[in-house]
Length: 316
Image (cartoon, rainbow, N blue to C red; front, side, top):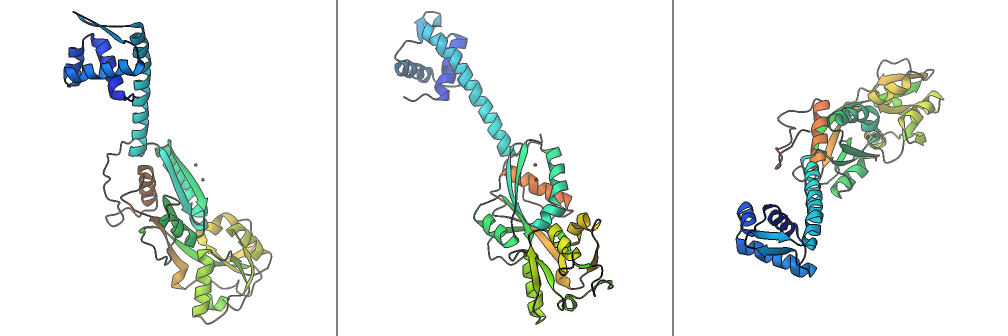
């Protein structure tokens, strides 16, 4: 015999009620089944736990010790069950997110903070990755949620619209293009660029647009962040492309010009990617619902299907 919660619960009920028949009635189980469980417990511990008499049963010293210990074990098991149910309902848990630089610098700080206000017991593990890596990691279950630019990826992923980036051109104040109010990307290809790292979605988009224009993209230097790119542009090392929302936090103290890009690709959608909506952890589902609501994308087309379990409404 192996110890199990059912046998301990029956033993506690017999001890509390003083009779095997009373415990069997309370637990809706046959008296013989309760007796068998008690005999197995005594055989397991190799000691008598109960003394049977005309009035019912009395606990032996070993039985009294087991009663005390069993109550503690059963209480801990109930607490374990309640806490794990919190994870199932989404009240507790960890959400693993891979997001690109654009989402992290523009949208996720505020939206994650407001999520924590609603769900303080859910943690968020956020890592920055480039867009092509994010979709690959999501299909491999490396994270629960991916947030990145919408690009062809070839994976069978669920895709939900998030925000829309407006890409803009940043130039030094004394640059030949600085006097323009807006620009076609083709015009900028005569000048040297400060680019992001090679795998970034923006860098890939610029290379593609330059190829379609039958012109080379002259990358003088490449950096790994928007603030570094803006500082390089201010120093006169070239021009660069960044999301308008991301540059707001840098441009105030920089001597640069910001020009809208007229090309349609300069309005690029950011999307939320998950491997399977139906099999998402509930905490991740709650986080996605919050992101969709925060971005104004919650409607009949983007709403997630109803979960199969009841949701009890209870840092980057």
